[in-house]
Image (cartoon, rainbow, N blue to C red; front, side):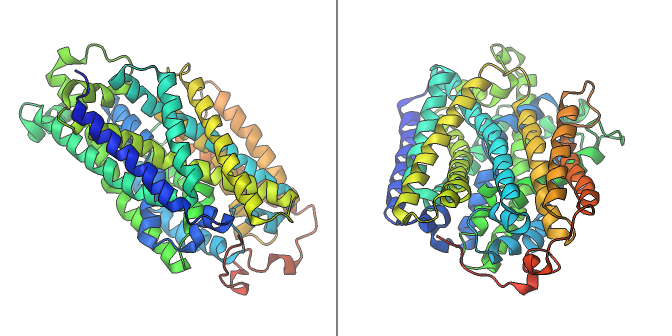
Length: 503
């Protein structure tokens, strides 16, 4: 089966609409305050939907159904754990980001621990994002290759360039408003796709449930407490730690907190995210189970599936027509772009705020804006290169690879923030020693065979090592001066009210 003219029209309308929206937003980009923070004029619901779009990428649209297609629902408990991160992010981290005169989240680390920790936090963010954007760009390339017959390399370059265009033009405002559109598109497409799969299974939902129950495909709980296995305890605890990384220490999300007019509006955007987590995850888990049941009922149709990560586009090519394939294709674009654009804009923000502006504080806003756009292009090209590397390393679940990358670098980054927020005694020497120890421990854990802990716990281990080492090492050095901690810890936050961000 091939795409029809109507499918191409539907996908083309989406791409054209996104380009027009980016162009419209570009007219308001007069300074880095506009390019990075949209002048703090974004309504809370748009910021919330943008966070949803940033976190729900092609990893969810393709890799999660593929994972459930091959396994069961034991990972679903991790989504409930992510909901419990919202109060921590909203009442502990968000006030610090809103009440400092910052654009970059890692400027807080500079205020708390000095310039070395500021730079270290930015570098950890870059490492975490580079791995993630490579994965989320490679996955849709698989889908587009399956549908169009064009090479994965061609598709990687096409998706990367299309995303770059509107991200460079419109900055964070274009990113947020296109994210809002993209969330609607991929939610609608995923719902229609689930309905199409269900109608293809003789007996519909009751038969899917009966088949799944017989094969334990809907198993939610995995017994055991072993830390090196994916049991329910590890998945729940690990899911909570994993949730801390994007919502508490990732510039791509923190930047959304800073685009709303007030702290209260930013907190409402987080509650919107919390309300969406379980329904959206349920939708994509259901697609995975329904696909398994469909191919159980039609075993002859699965011949030709080269890789389980391609099961969604494989079904798309086989069975969706009359414009539905074009809508799902647009949704795959949307799921990719909603994550990639956020990462590119946030990486450009860090490049300018944490490196270029610090070295050249006397340049005018036009110069900073020009550098921001060029840095967006640079990181976009890096994302394309990373995706092309993954094209030769596709022998493991890309969803698991994404979680491992998040845990490897994100755990140390959250540990840095927690050390600064929760303790007045921990100093720069302590956290630097903690991060160094965390890097060594995480490298040993990653390469150990067998691994002593599950990949779900990577971020938790990284955080714990930072804190456990930072505290005793800090006791060997003088404590930070009390005046330098004003507004920078949970014990001294009341000393500083919310102020507008720079730029």
